[in-house]
Length: 461
Image 1 (cartoon, helix red, strand yellow):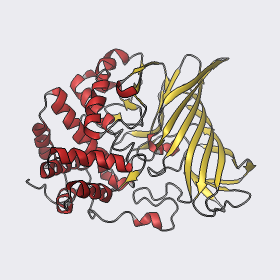
Image 2: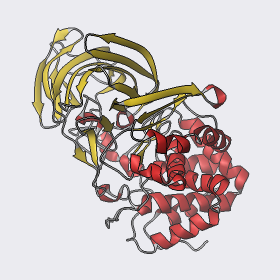
Image 3: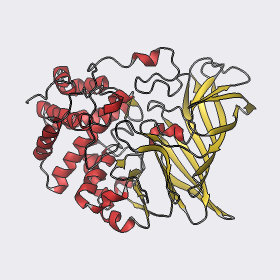
Image 4: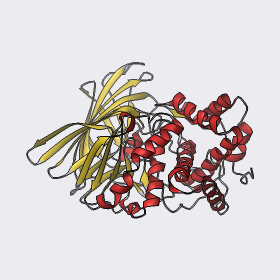
């Protein structure tokens, strides 16, 4: 997420490195029990598919939605809950029957007329709407959720923004497939995850249907509405490339985005085949600037980064690498965010070395200097206020560079490919990655990871 040209400030957090997977997920809690966002999610059911029919008006800043959610009960459910903040619920049905609903802050509690049996497949429909209110990304200051400027609307889901625009079991372990049915005023265009499967025009309105058939964490769901030009063309290995630009950003952004095909080929050689069927970049007209975000199959870039070709190429590489590390394999809890950001940062260093004339050794030295000016924070559990800190990005990437030096190039890239292959479409922990590394290398690498992922001084080797 949020690969920015300038690093954010770090907050000091004390935590323990390489502790076991969060026990909070196993204890009764208001939500799934993620230590950073303990109230979000519901462990009582698993969502398989979201069908989101949204009527959106960027000028008014409103959303009217009907979310049809297909799920399976993990245990007997007399009631269950879904995350939704800042939007009002009109009514809910469960398996076609009206349910009792209460809404409190960012939770909608649903009581079906009859209890749901353990293992039962069920669907529920939430009719809702209003004017979404964005949240704030911890210690970064950027808004997340549904963001609109009167002409363009877009979503930014990480880490807790998905439920600010649709009812979600809002945790990265809760992956599902998605259908987006987007109705907008005539004259505007949409882009979303996956691919466009239907486009209809009716009196004063347009409805686009987009579908993402690969499992996707809620925070990666992406919708953009505005005065967009959408371009589709075939890419390497049968990948559909589709990019979307506002009229004001196309001239500056399109030349840099042309590197996407070469990046896809380069990273596929390093990490294994690209994990999805589509990829592209959207650069909308937005006032929020200075970042990129890796929504699944569709990276979101702020228009102001397009002015510097080298910086934009680096950010594009970072967000594309997230399609493997973060999107296909997502963190099992937000404390493991380095498995997203450290890996994508190292990937951008690889791309800079390969294509931009910046030796890997220069990126390593720059990261070490930067970290010398930041407070000590465990990479594996940085705390909610340091999730998007230099420690997570740079020290995470330095950990991978140290691993590469320890095991050699061939084994290192086999570790990365093996990790992606083993956890494709799922979520993983630091222990999971270390287990893959140990297995591929044929040795115990825990001392290396303990030294690099802890809060102590940077190792010298």
